[in-house]
Image (cartoon, rainbow, N blue to C red; front, side):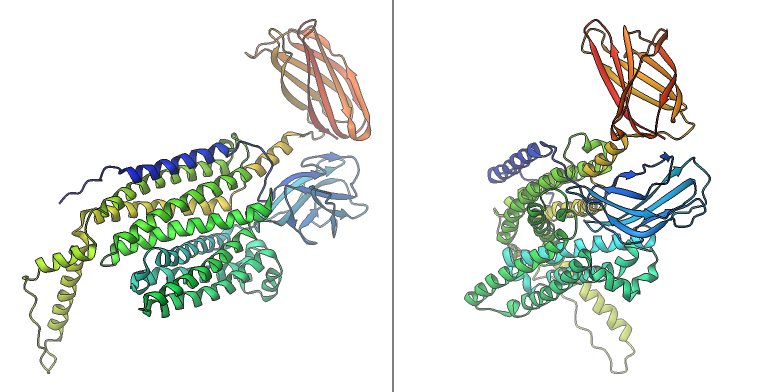
Length: 640
């Protein structure tokens, strides 16, 4: 018999419509504002800047980060041209208000040349970050300094730690979702072996993954050597950190979860009195919710939600998000196992899970939109950053998953129009009652026909399995439901993988902050000209164009200045007036005006432009395109 998907029933259509309306409304609120938020720490500035050439040795090197970081005396190292440390290994806290800034003092009397700054830190969301840059004293030189080529948190240790993270999430989903499915949808499932294996397997997976993460934490955030996983001193140091405390708390809560699972599949499964079972169900539901929320909080308190914008709101929202994911995907997995491995499930249980799944998705959408707003903030970040692109992939997967779930709801609605699976199974058994059963085999005492007896036993078991499969497959609606639930589970696995990758990706807001910091100041190295290109718009007719400025050689003392003005098509464009001014705000110098001479169409120049001292200079270019239309554009440039 060929089954086709049933038409969308009115209740199912209403439910799907409500879900789409809620999702659209929440997506409307997504990215509506641009309030700053961040997650992984990133280096947003340094003093001296990357590539800078300074006249004399600074007293210290300072680094500015996008969020709170954990550092020690060896987190910032300044290496001279020979590769030796030039800092005093004295960490200086320069934080002020919302500015996260740390530095190290330099030794006195260090020689001129190129210095390498290598840094490593642990961001407030538990992820290790590292980097390196150079600056020069006097003039650039060759350097023998070597920094690790492998980024912290990478290599084999990084792969193993990532696998453990995936496994911990998956274990939480199976443990929480499977238990919730039994208590809220199908109490008889507590006696079903495949359901028990799902929940117990989730507990075992999560416990093993948590232990692995605890051991791998030392090499993951430090040396990168797998052997350091068994360093007791390193483990002791990990336990004193926020991520270490979260992992230990998770292990303790998993101990409580083990007690919960033993009661669920022990005393609860054996309880036959309905009144007593109802009371025990209530107690297990309350206790299980507390344990599940505690497990979810071990992520919220140590990762993305604990830092950035509104952590007091973000952490409980993150707990709700994780619980909704586990209830939906864990219950979906359990239902899939039941449909394929158990002889039958009451239609009422499937309908209950369908309703719970709808509200789980609603909570998931609401909390997911809030989290996305914290980490993205702007529409452009969705396409300009890896985080935004991954988020779009996740949204697309959720849309496909919701569409697939709607088909499952249609099959579920069709189930309610038919008899219970147990009655259908009984009917099939009655129809097949006349089928001949294999005759029992008498095995001689001498044991010569043992092989034959084993073959017949395997045949008998295969026939029994085939008969059970025929019973399960006799309901075309149930077969259709199995297929759509299987499709949902497959998409959910991919969705879970993308979500885990997102937790390890530089959030869009942080990436944009770093990009803006880099764009705010252009570094000039001695004996290399400064080249800047700035668009302008005076507001009048034909007032748009681009100005290009070259300052050669781009250092203190005399320089040659060239200014080129082009129209939007890139052709040379004349203007009634072009002026340039140089300002060093840090030293209250300037503005120093320069009026270049008109050389040819779209070209002005000036010789002997004096830059009196090194620093972060603001170069302002004023362009007048008519008697009344004028504008000034500027750029910060490091001249040393």
